[in-house]
Image (cartoon, rainbow, N blue to C red; front, side, top):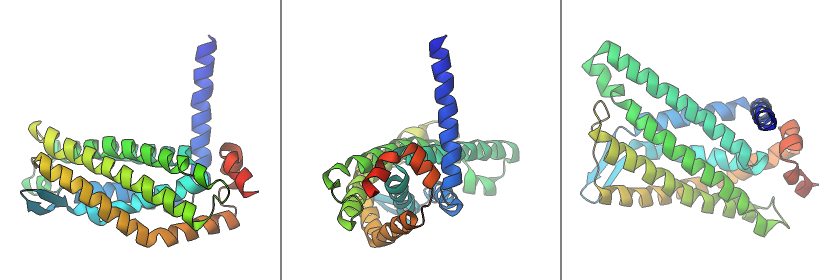
Length: 252
């Protein structure tokens, strides 16, 4: 009986935490994050570079945006908040995959298939990879704050946390996604029939992680500026005080 009550309390607590976060986090950030993850999945269908040792898809053009947002959210609201946002995006991804599969099954239109046919496999691979990499990014980002406890809000602390966590998480995301979407799933009926070799996957995972890191580094000053302005304006004060009080104690 006690375990059931504890589980129920945890569920209510998580629901309350999620509701509080969605009220505290600027809506434009939530929308941009979800839209970016969805667009990445559609762009990932199209291979723009296809060499024997390297393949690159179009998703690389915007994949860095989601990790920049996660770094900002982790810095200001904590890793649990970034995890919640990642799970919400994953749920939307899963919903999109179901919708695409149903539409293709009903319409049976070649033109439509060329746009969303087999998209379920891309969304599924993306969801698994994104959740795994996002969680690793969020907790690694938070863990890297320990060496900078004397100045947790400095530019050096923000840069090291963002860059190291992003590089590792981007590689994780790229490798898991490419391995599942283009190496495992293509052998399943109705999946996107795009196949990559293991050398292509490995080289692309490394190269894209570096390129995405460089891109994020260019926009790091913007991320630092956003965090600074959020602190000055007490953005999400209710959530931070209730669920992320440790960070507030550093700022006091």
